[in-house]
Amino acid sequence: MRILEISTLFPRWPGDGRGPIILQIAQALQAQGNQVTVISQHGPGSQVSEILHDVNVYRPRYAWPDRLESLQDTGGGLPAAWEKKPWTRLLFPMLLAAQTVAAIKLAPDHDIVHAHFTIPAMAATLSRPFHRKPIVATVRGSDIYRIPNYPGGKLFNRIALSGCDKITVMSKDLIKASVALGMSETKFEYIPPPINIERFTMGPWENREPLLVYIASLIPRKGPNFLIDAFAEVHRQSPEYQLVMVGSGPMEVELKAQAEALGISQSTKFIPRLTQVEVADLLKKAMLFILPSLEEALGMVAVEALACGTPVVGSRVGGIPEAVPENAGKLVPPGDSDALAKAICELLNDQSKLRELSENARHWSETAFCSHQENAARLLRIFETLVGRPQ
Image (tube, rainbow, N blue to C red; front, side, top):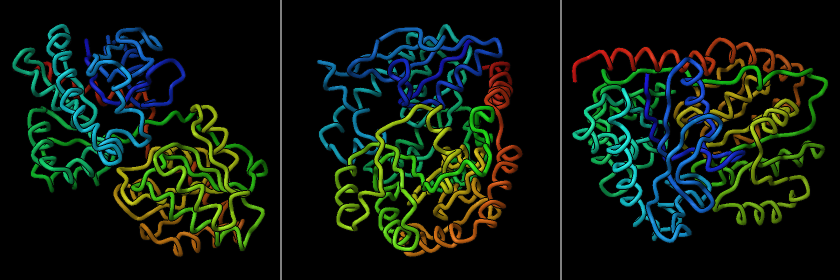
């Protein structure tokens, strides 16, 4: 099958950490004998057209000179650019237009269009009169939780998704949120998120170090400021522990100042980015993974942490309760630093309980989620049904 993937998130060059899950999906689809082309967004330093990790990638230009193509510059993706750099809002229709024209050009030579997020879904929908191919959208979180908060965002999502034949999600909370926007529940299908269970493995408990790990963009909706506050109390009770914050974003300076003011800067380490291999190595060493989000579709890094046998302390919000069962971590109200600190300290003070949660976490990850190959197989079953249907 010839599959056209459209996404606003995809690696910009070899080794880039943007959008690894989209790359992995494309690779898994190709591994099952399909031909995949990806339309993504161009940016400074990226190629317009190339073969990246054996996948054909096309990144149409949407602004000139290319230094203006800055929608990927702000950690946290397009919503962060919209909220933190208002001038970039002028670029959004230009990006949509560029992806729509690219879809008009490329989709006729493919059997199906698979769009990730609602802006690519709109590009697929607007281009459909020119290619008349079936469209599957995958919504991933911020497109459903954030875009409706912007002027015209709710209508934008309804139009974009109404033009799709099927919509897949990685959490059932996303179905609930989408239906609240006026979408028909019958269009949706839940597919468990894919995880590389061979990369994210569980090492000996004795190799664990006194580390608490956060891996996410440094943006308000991820709640890193609440974690810094909570860690001040954790550090008071257990000064041997270090907090490792992996990610970049507009809150970085603010968070470092917050750690300094609380007297925990020496025990708080900021790392802008890590490769997937480095992420796996860090998670295997950590005692806990912390996900203090105010909004979250699921939390893929939490899923990876569980696969490494690392218990998760997270917010009881969005799809996180679907990812983190009670026997593999603790959930607290979002935005509550005191509750977060209490949950962390309780686990750190009960090593036997922590070890039990670790064993449960690994077992849960093996049963609740799927491999990239199985994820691709389930997508293909949807694709094949639609391609066989008269358009």
